[in-house]
Image 1 (cartoon, rainbow, N blue to C red):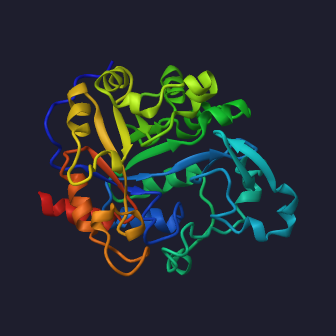
Image 2: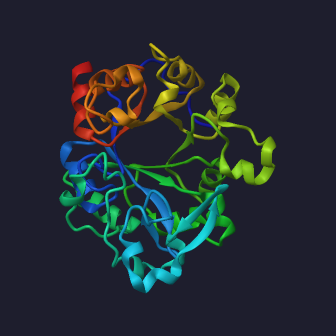
Image 3: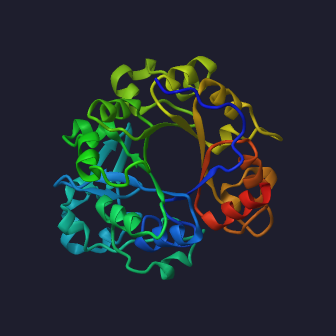
Length: 331
């Protein structure tokens, strides 16, 4: 069980570069992580999925047709397939069907080209990163930078023969000692990590709707949903095992004001994180949107300020520089 968290509001929440500075550079690229660090982010957040030969690579999803040029590679045309991942049927190319040697020849692409068209030309050194490549980059930084790594689709990969907790521990070792947090939407893999000797911090992610994939795999339609995790009883149960909870920002922003989730989670002894701060109208709450269409920046300052003012412990931001500027204004 964790030690009780000191109550009260955090005056200096962490700003976490979400997939690097992914609002300025192609997400999960070396350029995105380097820029996030240069802008002053307190931490970076990679997502981890495996290759066929058990190498962890930094990708938001294991289906990579939307974020690489794999669909244009004739040598890989035969690898296209349909696969069900966490209950969703997907068609494309999956990292677990490629070796690292094959994947490293692909070029990265902007996941949101209509919203962030300039990111395509700004990505330098546009190849995929391994987890160990990111560890090398962080160890070479001129200041300590925290790592908050998300394990993706753990139950799915476990069933396919890729125990994500074992792969992560093998590659992480004792690197970045004291600076590592692991997060997942699935509490099973966090428990497996701790049982295998992981001594870092763990955070449970919670969506605004639905239920965790590991519990759905185990219990079907009777699986507890995310909403039950965020009751006072649910938060107390999470606090008995994890250091924190990380939620969709919409769970903190009511129709015209913020909710009490941060205060209730703090009272249970949990740190609280939220995702994702983005300035484009497409991602802002309706009251913060402005003119110019989905790609234009709305009143992001108001929304960022509202989230940070809840007193939470950290925010994920695609534009770390903008989140840092708002945080400075709250000091």
